[in-house]
Structures are given as C-alpha cells and as structure tokens.
Length: 194
Image 1 (cartoon, rainbow, N blue to C red):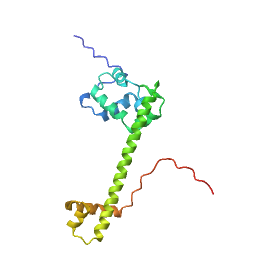
Image 2 (tube, one colour):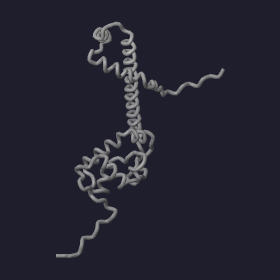
Image 3 (cartoon, helix red, strand yellow):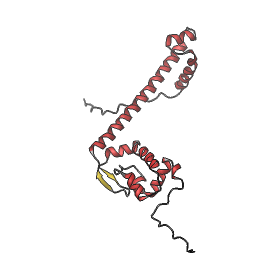
Image 4 (cartoon, rainbow, N blue to C red):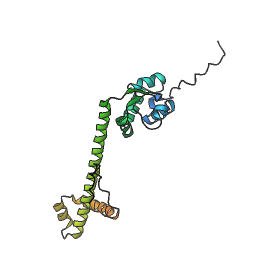
C-alpha cells in the first residue's frame, strides 16, 4: 500500500462539473465563457461547424450532451448571434481564430430569420396600437352615449362583463403619453430643393 498522495490534475484540464446533469443552459454559458473566453466572451461570433464535438474533446466530462445542445440552440438562435452570422465572413473555433468561410446559404438563412422576427415584432406593435385606438374609441363613445351599458355592449360587440375593464384600461392609457407610431424603415427618397 502506497502512502504517497495522488498527484494533482494538470491545471489546463477543466474539472468536471459537480452535477452536470442539473446544469442549466445559463450555467453552461458561464462555464463556456470561463473555459473558452476567446469564443464565448464578448460579442457573439459564428461558431465553427461541429463545435460541440470540439468542446467535448477539450473539456471532457464537463458538459452533458443535452446541456450543451440546449445551450447551443439558445445561443445560435439569439438575435445577436443571427446578426453576427448575417454579417460575418468566417466561422470561429474555440480559440477565437477564424476558420472555415461562412457559406452564403447560412448567411442568407440568418438574414431571413431576422427579417421574419422583425415582421412579427412589427405586426405585434401594430396590433397593440390598433387595440389601444379601439379602447380609446370605446371610451369616447361610452362617455357620449345615452344607451344602457347592456345595449351599448350589444351595439359594440363587447361582452358586458369586460366593459368596465376595457374602459379602465382606456382611461389609464388616455393619461399616458400616446405611443410612437411604428417606424417605416424604408429609406426615403431625397427631397428636391426648389
């Protein structure tokens, strides 16, 4: 039986996570920033294809496949990552070094996803503005009507039980500054000088 203590692990090898099964994607992100700051710290960079295998090779036992997959899905689906992907020319490895050239197809997919998200956001903003205008009209009409609340609701197509709530929201909104109209982001033609 040997009484010599075991030699310490080399400092370059990362220690396995105490409970990598319970690691959240956020904890995975923190760990990746510590292990590979050149790639994961700061602004997102397009990741080298099959980066998950590289991470598992360089940090064996630190991340489960499921945790790493969940983090990478979240990371590569983020707005900032898609913007970086749409503008970059190369993908980056774990050391932050440029590697393979980014394909035009991948760049185009990122641009299309960003456009889809902008359109969805714009539609949501426009719907919120329309609903606010509808509530303001409802309040104005209710304040000037001679109809009973039940008849007013029947005329407006509003359930009687929702009327008070809608009117209260409209009163609160009337006291707030009006929302900014959605911006049209198309470039305007230059104006002619007279």
